[in-house]
Length: 176
Image (cartoon, rainbow, N blue to C red; front, side):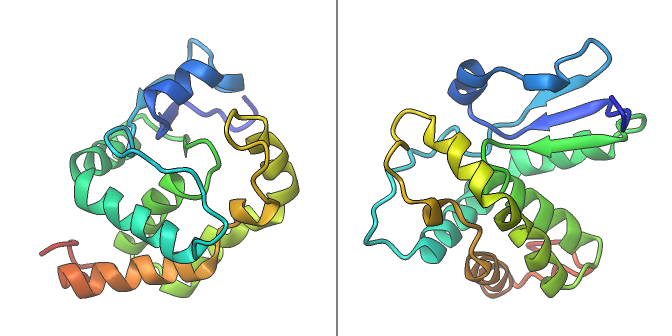
């Protein structure tokens, strides 16, 4: 309310929205757009033996490769006339949100180091985040560190975009 948010782009899957609701921004004056980046991907439970950065980079790459229409839809909603101030979010605020933020910032010409710095801001709230996420069934025993936003994950994702799609995020259309 203080910021005057008029648009929310919710990147969570349908079951997450049903489980957790819309939260404190559920007001008649706020336009909600559900854009579930990972709805079609089955996410396997976290395994302690996995490299968290590699796992996340693979998920981010999957989003880019398989949810292009949804990414474009989210960006259109954010760019629509009268849509600002706006918020976009997912459950943790680092994976789906991180991909959309990275792509948006990259298209605006923001340097990779700043994009990765933005991505890792999540780590400043890791205690609160891990407590909230452990309350979700299936996450009760996950280690706190498994909820981190590892800089290597975003670095690998950005590098893969450039390598696999000849993409230069700073001003050239991705996939051109």
